[in-house]
Length: 377
Image 1: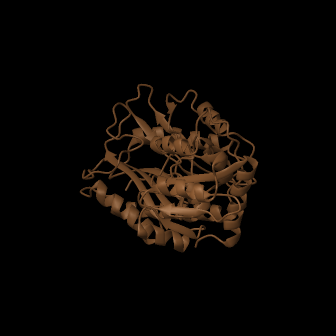
Image 2: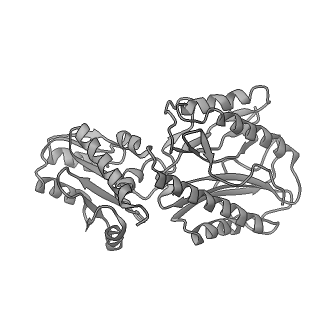
Image 3: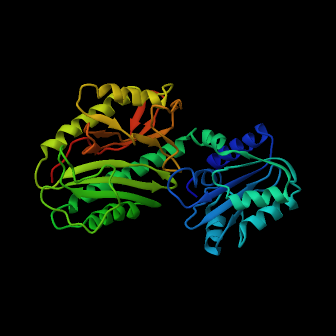
């Protein structure tokens, strides 16, 4: 188990307090193997159960032991070994087993919390039929607020994950040359991360000729392909390791064989935008304040700031977007990936660059040691 008993108990107390405050008779946590958009985080946060295929469901009922249902025996064994919940059960029919457990524990009315985004429509219809006096209420946003209160143990995992991203980038620099495929570069990035403890990895990578008039390189890049690197290419990389449930991300581009003046120009504007945005990146400021500062820095540059600008990261890679509409107040322990896209006015060329930051008591900590130099190799 990665986490200490204190961390496990901290999470347990917080979730039970939520159940009490929201007057819930039970809480269902549904997790699915996905890297974004809140499909995994609530269940993983409370249980520390690594879902490596399909989905799992945890049922929390006050004053009784929680239960976790998994869809295969190897996942059940894995949950029994590492999850905070010790009652792990194999389920061939999740819905049938959830209904049976609720009835066994005499939950037939009142409020039951669940992520309505995660609850399948077929499940919801059947649950309404079986329990006509239960009110099914949205719980995810409330749980996410708990998850955003990061502990020191979580912060340390962000630091470890960022080091994996830095190492993956360095591994890529050693193999990037004409004749090497995008897949081969990706393999080196992910090999480094896995060999040094990454639980999972998400990589986007593309190479091509970059110009300000009509670029062949897209940002953010698509998944890698069999395309071979050519002299004069630029290679864009989104390097995203997952370390013990927590995602970090490093976004970098390098030139192959010769410098690229067009890329250097847009790179300077992008890095300046990040630098100005970081002046507003501190406790008490809102996410939107960071965006407004980046937008202000772009005035008169001849370029435009475009989405995606970044995202709050954690157990889910995307726990909230960096946008001018996001009123979320930054608090110590939050991890935010800042990677603005800078575009030409006609939209024919753009650029993508950034990394992961941790909010601290004093301001922020840049988690990556990789510098901001646009390298030519």
